[in-house]
Length: 247
Image (cartoon, rainbow, N blue to C red; front, side):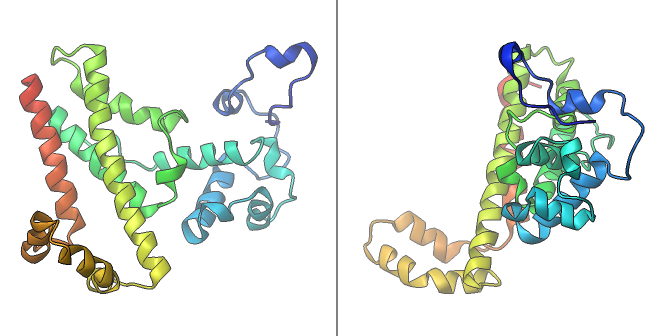
């Protein structure tokens, strides 16, 4: 399927078909083994090992063993390539896992989305709520279906989904940022991280302006347990939703 050509003349003001509309059209007889799936899979592999910045159309062509322009038959450039990558990763979410009720469904979605972000750290920057794709839309579809039947209007249903999704995204992005910091400084674990930050933290605590935070530093026992922090925060979010809406 040729990528959309730049509009000319009177076509300039006409809405252009999206990547997904073009890919849904019947494909012509294949001239090669190149497919959107192969393109996305190769690009994701590059991003996972080398970072999103390493993904270029030329680098992708090298990984696929095709001509530099071959992928342009499907995507118009890097922006659409990233859309394809994000959709490919979202396609790996186990959304068909049975769940007993809305809370279990929302909990499972949050856990799977976090795992996805940690496995593909670049996606916390690449995936936005506005870059709609088939597999991304499958997530709210699953959530909305689980929330149906509880007397919630459409706006409230979306607000509940967004609350859980934003908590999950923010928590995951924070974990990814910590991983990036450790990688850039050569710190392997929590102890090395705290040792590296000790000079700054010692000065700030020494000012006496943060007694509550200093108490946390001395008493906290789960500083290096991100799973516990995520699950505890998620339970707070879900408890609040259940109590507020009586569901």
